[in-house]
Image (cartoon, rainbow over all chains, first blue to last red; front, side, top):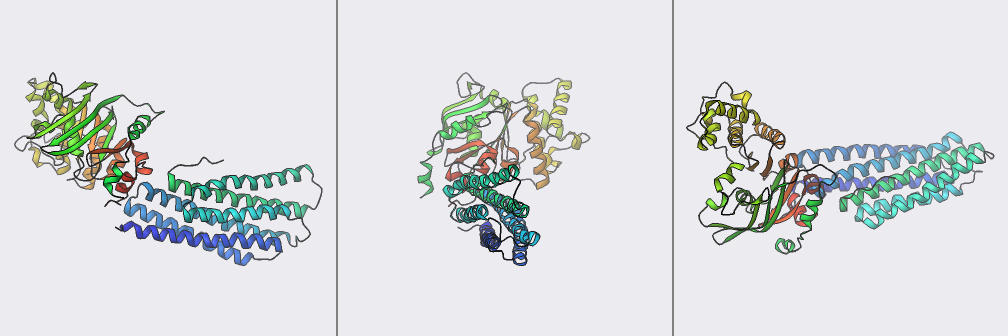
Length: 211
Length: 279
């Protein structure tokens, strides 16, 4: 028997899936454009704004469902997690926007070594994808895997920063721009991990300690 | 899978989880407990091997669908069940470790130590506010006027009713509003100085404001008493209870800290009941 609340929960789920598709596209486009030296600031800014507005809508619907139905157990966990996940997706948009902005700040970066960014970018894109898959399938295994993958991006970022600090020679523009991009990728990976944590919470009620 | 099949999956781990619950907190001992309690109305087997422990100075809520045995359980806790013709019980009910169904224990004494507040406010209709509160003491032989005055004052204060009725003590108890009548009944129960207070859906006939007053009262009462409340209102259980027990078809399905039970119930049956996916 369908409950009154089910309609609202379905709508919430559908909004999260809309955000998932858009945030995935935003992150991928921003990373690829950076590697190819393309200016996609206007597009990414528009998508990022859309994600922010969707996050507001998710929050409003979640609060309405809580006020109307006083959900408990798995319903409550799902609604709480949707609020957190929508925040994560809106952060994907914000960091993608920051990545796109780097080209605008630094101009032509075609001579810079982008191998580390390529590696971290691939990992971040995969993580965004997996976090969405984990949510869609309520897949606890995938959600747990994200934690390990996050370490890889963290390490790439930290290694790069340490190397830059100890060997200050080289092109300053390349070093600073790469540091910024890697930092944004590291944050994207963090939020993908948090989405995984929320999936774990929806399914089991267990909360994961943040690193 | 049917509900009846799922109930077979219930494990005694629930009780262990309850005992483990609240670890790290300073919790009192168990004030009351049942051990393999069975209750019947004639041929109708209402409670089935129900073992549950109630912590001292805590509010425990009993939830479950109609007919699951909630009211019968609390009526067994102060031997009111046996007053129904054809009713019987087996198993144990302990108050401070002493079997209350023992031949050496007087049922009236049990009912004084374990008071009851009912669903519908039921002040004695021909008595004043004062006499309603003093009635239990008078029945117990207290005649000293000063003692009675003090007990009435204390009980009405504890029931958060004193300020509203202090100038109307001679008025009839039934002249009060529904919420006040219920608090009057709570004061009446408190007057005989019980140790445990049982409440059988005490707010079901009250409006939200009167309900809020009773709920506030519950949280202050637990400082002095052990409270067990039966409620159909799950949000009420979530608001007032430290521990919550879910009963289904006369069996204890899940029991634990209220926050845990409402956020992440361990049993599928509890989850389905709480989220309204029953049937």
